[in-house]
Image (cartoon, rainbow, N blue to C red; front, side):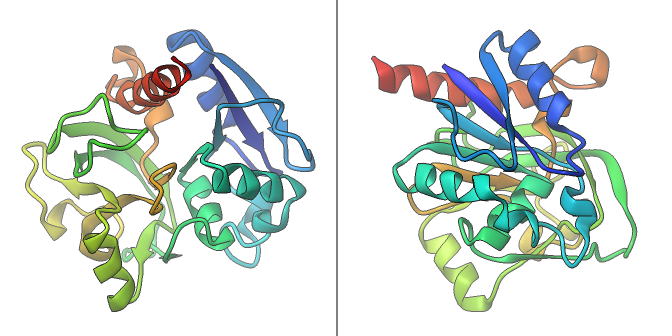
Length: 233
């Protein structure tokens, strides 16, 4: 299969994503420039973390208008897999591919540390290698990761099982004390109704090797690979 990593001006996790796919997962991967109008046959598009367009105006608000985003929108509408990590999640929200918005961290400070997230939905292209309630150790690094959605929107997320990850304790306890940014109900990641678009604030691409502190990020990418290859067969 083939992954595509989008590069916006200000992206800084693009090579991290490329590295884990190329050298750890051993799959084909290429870069996609923000002005491109062709996804070059990718099976999964990764919107990486960073500070697209310097986070001027609002995180993800300018990147949402990049030419490649129309191609990504069309790709997602047809069932193509899209994963937005950190700033990529913010861009997906701004583009309307996922519901909700990101606010400034409740601490009003940049947060960079290891966290634990609980897998709430294992039946998605991004978590099919996980077990329900499995706890993953994955780092966060952001200033605007405080996920918010209206009361009605939250109700729909729950009814449709769109909340994929919650921040939790190492044992899986969901409590505000383990919430690094103040996100509503400890939400760390969500998917769309069709389950082919995922947004998550933690960085799985930074958790691919033991020497880095965790290999749990591999669960996400292995799940994508498994899903695409099963579909192809």
